[in-house]
Image 1: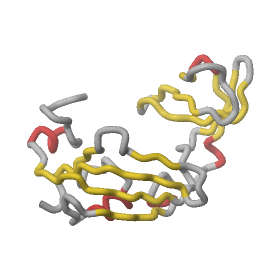
Image 2 (image 1 turned 30 degrees about the vertical axis):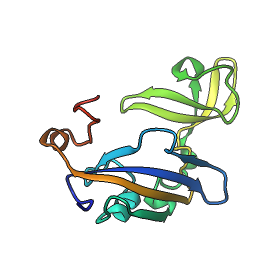
Image 3 (image 1 turned 180 degrees about the vertical axis):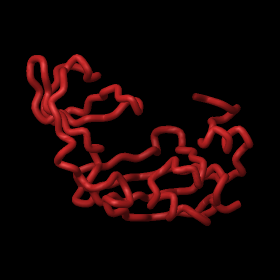
Image 4 (image 1 turned 135 degrees about the vertical axis):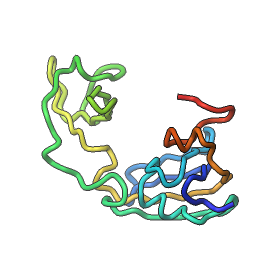
Length: 160
């Protein structure tokens, strides 16, 4: 079966930033599952995986516009530390979480203070060229429930 709209693609990935500043992979965890055609992964990644089958490998480099967008310098702001979720002592460069009307959002700490912090609300990978090395593990038809919910469910059904 090929990856197409309303199929669930299960894959492992390695993600690297051009220039070597960032890297992560899914090999030490369960593979990722997503419902194709429902905007559950980056658009450029979804385009690259269309038509692929289990066992195939895909390498794709995405410009910022195909990934997390360009950096917007206007997305820096001062925020009360009490609104930030983080572990330990807050320092410049740390990733913290803030609750927004659209759900939790990552922010990067620029300058922490005693009561306020200057944060950057751009996605940490905004403005970066990213390369994904993908290995397709499995492709299956989505269930009616997955299509209705707009995302893949784990083994055994619904896991929100």
